[in-house]
Amino acid sequence: MNRLHVVVVGAGVTGLAAAYQLMKTGRADVTIFEASEQVGGTLRSIESERHLFEQGPDSFLARKRVMIDLCTELGLREQLVGTGPLARKTYLVSDGKLYPFPKGTYMGIPLTQEAFEQIPFLSEDGKRRALLDLTMGPDEERDNDSMGELLTRRLGREVVEKIAEAVLAGVHASPIDRLSVAATYPEIGEAARGGSLLRGLQKFVADRQHIAQDDDLPKTAFLTLRGGLSQLASALLSALHGLGATVHTGRAVTSIECSSRACVVRTAGSEITCDAVVVAVPAHRASKLFSAEAVKHALEGFHYASVATVALAYRPRDVLFELDGSGFVVPRREKSDVTACTFVSSKWPHMANREVVTLRAFVGRAEDDQIVGAPDEEILKRVRQDLANWLKADPEPTFTLVTRWNKGMPQYEVGHLARVAELVEVGSRAYPRVIFSGAAYRGVGLPDCAADGIEAAQSVLAMHSS
Image (cartoon, rainbow, N blue to C red; front, side, top):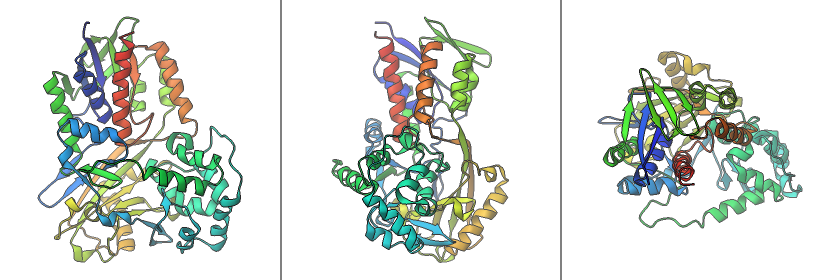
């Protein structure tokens, strides 16, 4: 059987995973084009003598096996580390003060009467309204429920605005009333359709605790790599070179055309003919590569928010709040530029340093991301002020680093699954040799992106074996 020639556009986690899956089968030759000067996409780790910071994601869900399997294949298993015991506690900002989440929650949602009673900033009416869920009938099947609509119906608006919005919508930097239940947390919709949302989520959490974990790995919900997640990108790149893949960085693809027999991929001043293409760049960038209006229109239907991370280091004596948790989240109602903050040196024991306290704040979200375009000095001024108020932190940290991710957060809005299905349909008609893959479509977490890249590779191989 002749080897396929496949072009992968984009060398983030998805593109690298797709290329690696293709190359290790021995059935394909792969050429990767990456517009930036380095591979890895959002995987960027900054390390100095005293600090280790992630500029993008800092971890992945351990229960999603694909990342563990990938790290194992690449010789990184011994580098996997878990969160420390302090990470079991998370705070939420309410009326300018930090409150710990009670035990017995799921994605911030209290699941029992006892948990609700431990939340001082919820009114008694708000607690009673939320507990009505226990006596309500099951929800009907709703394909286009937003998270805000579902939780308001089941638990009341106070719980949504004061608690759920900060966690559930915060993960996607999205307004909770536009966030698709089916595309983000389908288990929440399923629990509501089974009767009580709270009881359904209790069962979901209990069932998930029985998932087997490897004896040699930390028994924590999240894992990361000791030397930073950019280790994964470096290991994938090294493996691809070893397998004979061709990797071009600093070369952006400008257009893709396909016939029934082949595809032509163009960059500035060159073109390459191949058997198939995996497009693993953000949808707003992918839309500029195709001439077919139906495909362009489908890709333009995926929206993004801009966000930024702000790494800060302080002397321990300059932060008076006890950093005995993983961090805090901030609801929109607080009208703060900061949406969340990780207590890095508390969450990750391998990043702890007695001489320094490290934090990472997040700013920007959909419909409120103008701050991301401000100068570094303005972003730092606002972040430092919030941290001074909430953590009693000295307004002058010893180290700062601002990282912007313009249009970096895909918005999984109501109707998202239908938009993905439309892209697959019109894409397969206009460009049958092209597979669209990445964070915009089937999950934003690192395991989701890696799995989507692997699935894209398998689709290419299946397409050419039939």
